[in-house]
Length: 276
Image 1 (tube, one colour):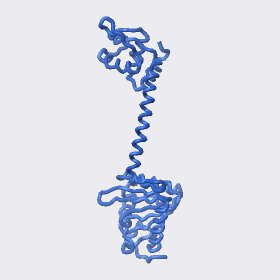
Image 2 (cartoon, one colour):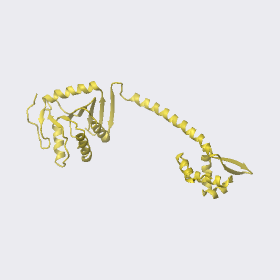
Image 3 (spheres, helix red, strand yellow):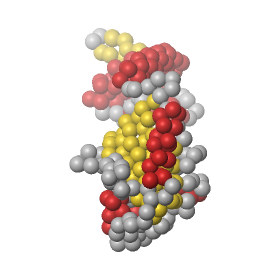
Image 4 (cartoon, helix red, strand yellow):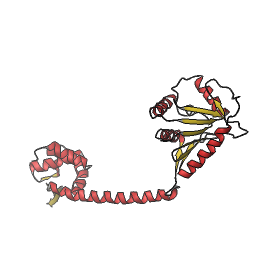
């Protein structure tokens, strides 16, 4: 009889075997080979359940069944026979690992990637939130062309966490904005009061110079495109240093033609003149 019945129960449970199997195995060890009726009585497991569990015990190799005079006699096998079950599980795990590699290769064929470029697609609000959070790991200035503010599409609590993280990491942002961004800021701050980015500078771009229809944010080697229009919510990250550098050049050309904005909270329209 094992010195710790609880250890047997725990180990068999880790193998995914029913707890009643442990009760049956311990009863066989305590009382020796026995009939189904005796096993039911000694283990406390209902007879109808025993018939269902015997197959699992045979598969695990921990019992043997002899038939005498049309009666089944069950005896406990050596607990070490579980090694066969473990070996089978190891092989199943190796097979699953091989299948996972095949699946990963299949996904790589449907994605857009190379040694120099990766493209990540994000769907829905949760996907766009992940893209925003990715920005908090930036090591360079964030250059933003913004169609609308982010807090109106996330929520106040998320925006607060995002701002705190950006401020903790001393991240710097410059933003080129259009009239729609100003309107979304006015609507938001009419009803909310949030922490503000410590390093944020914005300029307004006349739509005749450049109409802002989507949000684009560039940092490190990433260009992130956001879409929240017409019920479609998705985002794309293009990770390529040359593309990011080209987007930076576009941003700087637009920045020179844009109008400085000091305070978006109370701004209705931008009236200042472009600066060089």
